Image (cartoon, rainbow, N blue to C red; front, top):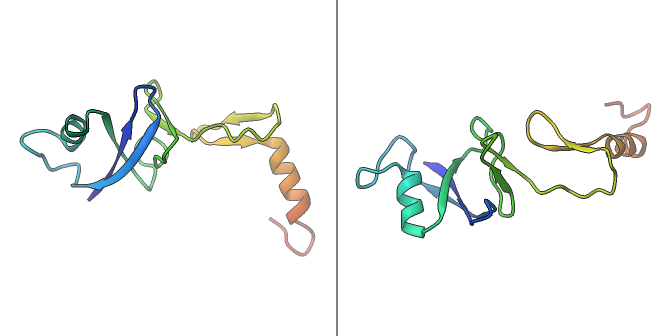
Length: 110
């Protein structure tokens, strides 16, 4: 069993399905090729554990073919400090500071 993401022409994930294991073939084609041909969309494998393409694909995520990564949309937190980290996940130092100030104290250290 493996998971596969379907992409539109803008490389945005439109659906994620459970399919056959990536080592199996369908009519001599890899699952990505067969599912893609069947649906008429680009199809790429995705993984819960992040061992391929950095992150598990979700509907609305963007596929970056240069880094071969699924990336969630920018959370638009309103700060200029938001950036993609090495794991292709959004971070914002201002949001982290605000979270620590609100949720952490001497009795609940990080």
